[in-house]
Image (cartoon, rainbow, N blue to C red; front, side):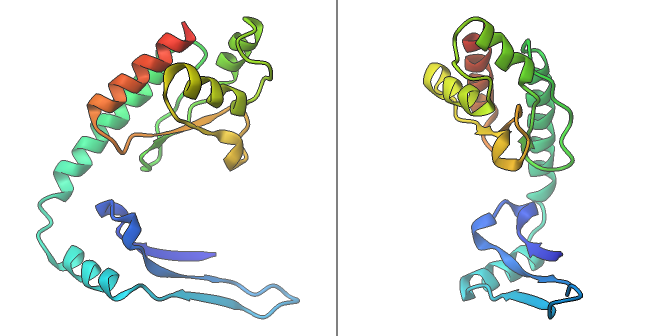
Length: 163
């Protein structure tokens, strides 16, 4: 599958523009999907590509800093293992040990990332996405497309909820 898009580096995901196609299998015709962006997306695409690019470097630097912060902060929480992301603005830590710690303390009833995510929402007021939504049971996904202050508050709440 080939998908091409625009705006990811400018954080304008609601203004997606792009196209995708799927190669034919032996028993099927080729399937092609062309997404026609709205006129506002086309104007925004032109402005993003031809306009001032001065905002890109500071934004990338801020995301690199947030990335480093969240990975280091997650790895400091017992039961979490987080590797660097490959350019996305999500952290995807392995929380299987943290899940088992909560289960052993009778804090959660089932050893799942869903139960763990619900616990964080209810006890820490932090929303995460269970990794099982992506086929990765025992992991969670956290976005760092927010302010540094929000990240610090969220990670502090998670650490406190697991202490």
